[in-house]
Length: 524
Image 1 (tube, rainbow, N blue to C red):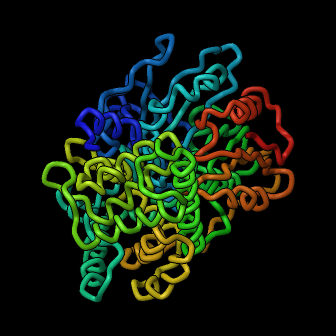
Image 2: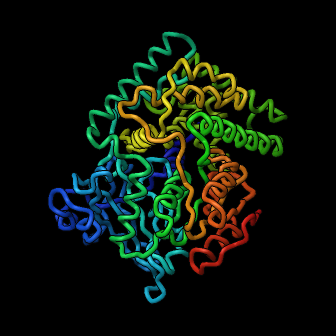
């Protein structure tokens, strides 16, 4: 059935992680008063005083939208800027500006400190993410100031931007699963141009947007915020960032939670293969739900295999001929696959996926294109946030591996076996850093943290983006007595916001009262 404009607008609002919020930009007079002048030594940076001001509407790079509304009880959102070294190997050198946002604790007399959030990506804006999800964390605000930030290269923190909005429309419509040599050349040329655009925009900052620098930024935030320990809540990529922080600063870890866990043992290929399997598992579960509902499900097929055959046939037809999408934009195979993946992040989006697939089969690609736009950070006005540019920049400076298109092509068989729907896309994506202009840092991140306080590690069995196996890997890698494993038997990316009362009670008990669950606790 066709989706109305109102439904499409509601969907984009519901699915995008770049929710409405923001802070004043770097030219703001109040924020400028907090800056050390010129180059600053580390002691000057740790002693800087943040000047908090009312938050204004987010920038285009942060996703746009209105300024964040006050919290229950009228608590306002406050924003500021922190100065950090551009290169942590040279703390006396040039600085960059990092945007922060906070909401003060309700119970100041029993305040524990600041609780710092990273919502993942990499590339997601914390300035927009925290107000967007704040209602889910209101219980934690009883004793914490809720704080988040745009990591370096993201949103309002010296964002990496690689192309114009018009160029991005064309780039995301490309065929990212080439079928012949001509399509391979087209993809290679586009990736080269995209990487060159990133380098031209970011310049000298591009080598310094990686996770290790972001972790060091967080310890500077801890000091400037006045906290003896860093209390932290990391989701998705935020778990990798939190693990790296624990490795670098084990003595500074306070109460920390890692939810939707990235496997620290997985390199580029292992991580991509794991995601192919994870999204395939989520699609299997979606298809099984469709079969179980019988005639209530509008998709054809009486078995999981038949439902998924319908999906693969639809994608094959889009590879040959796109269909009308939104306005003059068409739905391509790449965008349809992207939209399917976006809808698998949460079981709440399954009805949209069912409706979008049915509509596309009838020649209307608007809903799947809306889902794809949400994944790529495209607003209804046609402007893009920098979430995908920052994602590429951070991943490519983190990981050393550089696969050519030819090397990626050689591995497609294994990826197709892992997922008939997502395998090709994940396999070809191995080459996404092949033409990146700066080298990577590691094979995989070191998160060993002997001497750290306990870290709660929460995994979801049906998580498509960070497969459940990464939970145990993170617990083991953090080290004996550090990682405390909690399992949520459910669907979706992330457990705390799933609505499961057991997970919320377990996490809140640790963060608010310091009560650790037994490692191996299972919530159903």
